[in-house]
Image (cartoon, rainbow, N blue to C red):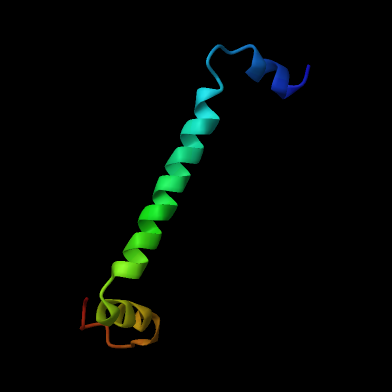
Length: 59
């Protein structure tokens, strides 16, 4: 018996794919809005973190 047959026997299983799609879409839209509205100085500072060797200077 295939795995899909087990899933088809569960009542209301179709809600989970739609829920996960909506969560992913919401997260993507939120991350995109944050990226466009973020302060450019903060983004520049965060982008330089891997290059900084000074460990006494926290964010």
